[in-house]
Length: 113
Length: 116
Image (cartoon, rainbow over all chains, first blue to last red; front, side, top):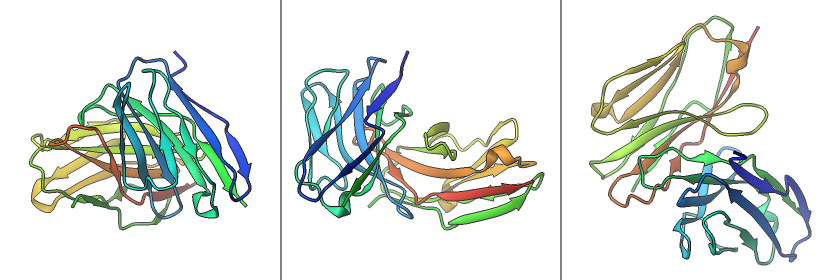
């Protein structure tokens, strides 16, 4: 089991560029989510999905898009990168519901110049 | 609204000292779940424990123990006889049961440095 994988590990973008952060899991988890981690702010939820074809916004969704066409994959799209999106991004998955712990990917460190 | 507060930004101790990390939460749900995650210097997030709102029993796992008190809305984490390998950022998180979406609300994190 690879668990939750994320690519790339590091990325530098210029303001206005777009890109997609990839996330995949091989545990057949229904629930997947994206968080961003900023110093002194913990992790904040961007978007989440409770199953293929179903997505919803989290706490900080502006500037990001997601889709969930398969159970395994949950990509995060930055439409027009801004310096405020410089952060470490974590993808997570779980069996679903509020009871189950989430398994996190290794993270993607994104810098927007 | 739901909120998790970890008032201790950074803690520094010497190896073998005991240390307690505080976590205070706010929620209007009667069913909720509390978690602790560890983030070592390598950056990954590691699940440590889950506690549901109906179970106030304290838990001990080796040198780690957790004290859940609904009366004070706290879920504190104690490391006994700390070791250098315990150096990490520790996050407390809350998931509300009513929505059952599994969304996690994280505290700001506490950076623990254990010096040899």
